[in-house]
Length: 434
Ligand code: ADP
Image (cartoon, rainbow, N blue to C red; front, top):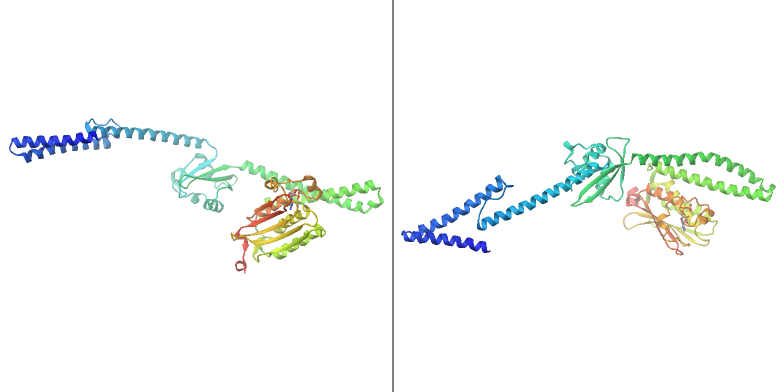
């Protein structure tokens, strides 16, 4: 403010001086005009100096000036200097980030809010085949064209990673993970998991082969044991009991091998070929009949079909999943319990199969682990009932192949509900399949 009033005083003084000299010479108006012109000339000179400094030598010291102009030059110079320091610091940080991303073995690709490529490291060049020269600015789906990647990218649900073959090397398996950041920008990371994939494949093949190889000796054993059990009455009681126990254990091993083979098949085979719109009433009724036979009429089992929609899926697999749930309900509830098999619509347009019982229920601490292979709440009881520990793992796999999920609700002494939740795409209302 002080500078501003000094500037006004300067103007007034020049005007007064011009007017006084003009008055002495007999032309006060002309003198005033000359005074104002001197003032204008001074300001124009300073303006020119500012312009030249900013356009020609912005990094040099500002031109020397006094008063308001001098203060303005100083401030501009200080502001420029602090901006330059911030810029350098940002540039150094960016360079460090790029350097560390370069050193990573995983691919890192930065996309802008439209999904166009902004920057990527050299691992991305090797794994995904991105070329610096002409790929910058291209949309990612123009370069990674696999339909699964495109739908994963567009769905914007990146909670789970996506596993795919590399677009430039069929032998290489990549796991993609996308992270949203900033203003809808995306970071695509791709990791080479070929080794892990191969190990997993070996594990699956090993389990499938061992199970397959065990089948023949087990069939021979159980065949002979059956023959001997026919003669058990003629044998001493201790031997007869032994044969009976051996028969029970071979049966258990056969169930185990069958479940392991089924799980391997579910894991290896892609599925989807035998998916049809299934009528649920007869399917649930036939599972109910099998469960009643297993229970020897000690439980009451009812079927409740609350929707006439059909389920798009594999009859064999859905039957196997529902049977596992229904047989569990029979095996883990006391006689006299009530079991319901229900098919109903859900508010989101999907549908669900519920297997509900009013038995002893399960402590919630066990629920998150129930679908793990060989996880049992009560090991002794499970083996006594003939369980293999693979039932719920099979159910989970079947449901995964039907884009569905298993929800378990249970509390001790309050029974249990095992709910298979199917999305709307699998819940076919009558007008859809007619
Ligand atoms: P298993 O072959 O041992 O039955 P599952 O994977 O089918 O293996 O089941 C895992 C465990 O879940 C069982 O050991 C049992 O303790 C528990 N379980 C399953 N269904 C029920 C049920 N309806 N009520 C109570 N417990 C259950």
